[in-house]
Length: 172
Image (cartoon, rainbow, N blue to C red; front, side, top):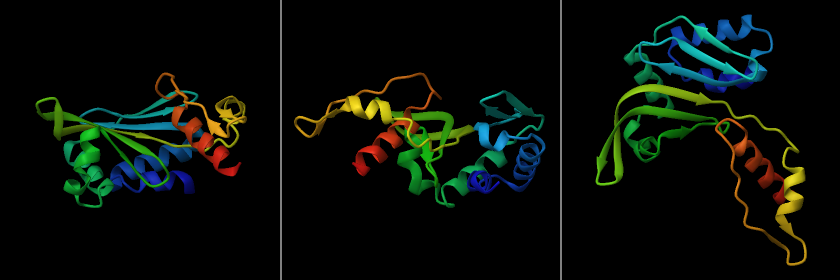
């Protein structure tokens, strides 16, 4: 469970224990887990490639805030800009989506209050997934890279693809 531990360490002890036990009890879940959703007064949801697993435990607001504080190294103010963008990026390239009430100044979000849910998106490296695409992106005649737009629905691997494209281009 080494890979998933870099994510689980952010959760309060009771949620950490529930998540750890669920992952251990469900063979292969660690390798296929894509998201962990915690929402105020709602069960915990684990989304994997095979199925969704619901943990019948109602998360309270204190646990959401404790998790957010750990994510921000106990300095939420220092992460205000990222929080206003709606997500934090943590070690390992994992992203945590944040839901709350936006405080706006004109058209600009200046703060997020009443945080009600956190959605942990688990990053996975798939070496070679961009090999076919990189060949189409490189202008070998001029030694440049064509402008490229990557579009797909959420959770379909845009970031994974982009990371592998960067790895491929860096290695060539």
